[in-house]
Image (tube, rainbow, N blue to C red; front, top):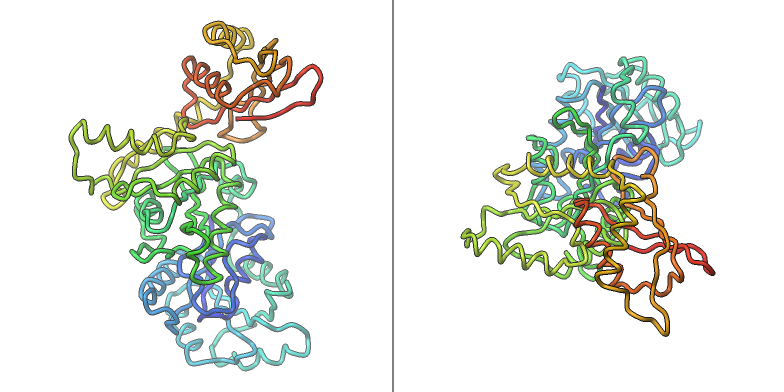
Length: 452
């Protein structure tokens, strides 16, 4: 698939242009220079044929010295990997020496370049584009990314410059590829895990919490299966957000959990499960999506004896008891160990999501469970199941939840503890790793009710 990289100095409107082309708010738009640090990837949804767009950190002005070198590195890699470069400049600020320097670097790359003069809100301001002729690029495109002005011309010019026909990647745009959201609190190793999976320094890795501010969508293929990796901003307790940008980042991470097919929670093996890990796990449980627990930095565990490892895993499982269906994968993102085990588990979950309990089998399982341990009384009556069947998986989704429709006497009679008991008995027959079991209850005198 063809790649178009959007480059420019800080605060010229690269992220606004990126969001406009992507058709959704992915990169954070803010008037603070240096907001975008990583290469943020997405599919352009405005062209007839899909292509990948890459938003890069502002280069050169060094608004954030802690990340200036990494931001420049990320932009350099994007420039090398791209098929077409888009240089974005600010019409209101005029041509600057840094614009000229960036233009020179892009010409030396040998790649085709389009010059976008941004922040031209009306026809009267188009004369401002003449100031940028000194950069040496023909036919600059006058745009206002904030007001969607000139986007059609930009798309047409991109299509002229590169051949965009790539049917193989169209499925990413249509949402047919499973979306894996990698979530967790800051500094747990989410970006390191993405880099280990990709074997590429695509996202910036740092020991400063909050390095990743955007949710980064990255197409990836493993042993013939395609995925979309979503590296999210670290989620911290809201009282610890140092800037409004961190608030936006947390919102993006929470949204990524909701729109993902599979959520992967990364936990620091040394620090163990914190209250914030529990909060994130709670968001995952509420989303009722497939889930995996990744215990990162396993190479730093001191007690590697059989007893020590068991005690550590039992502690983690106990702290996150409400995600008891989520399998645990231990690994070291820094050393790249056990990455295949993670994707083997993902494939196992995909296979289980396709399996369906026969109606007769399901009713036998539930009858045996209720005979072995009858439901407790609520008032003067017990909860009773008359008939059960498994519903089909959501259309077109590779990972799903196990949805069971139960015809019962009264949905209100089902307690949370007995519901957990029934789920456990079903898992005795079918493992369903990482997949939540959802009961949809239909009573004689009440409407349907869903519960996990």
